[in-house]
Length: 78
Image 1 (tube, rainbow, N blue to C red):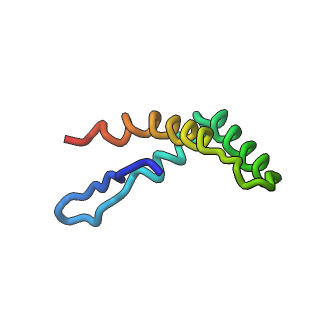
Image 2 (image 1 turned 30 degrees about the vertical axis):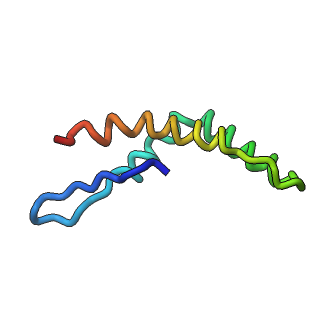
């Protein structure tokens, strides 16, 4: 998740995508949301109806990560 990835490269370098590294660096700041999502996943494994989902927790988790990543990702974009 997270939309478009920023690819950075000069004329003589291969492109480098910094987003995955930034996401991993931001995950500790979003631990509350990650734990809520993981707890939800555990709960719905036991749901026999197939109606349970973790959409809200998923978006909360990635919203937190994206909020942390965005300023770092775009600070040098011109």
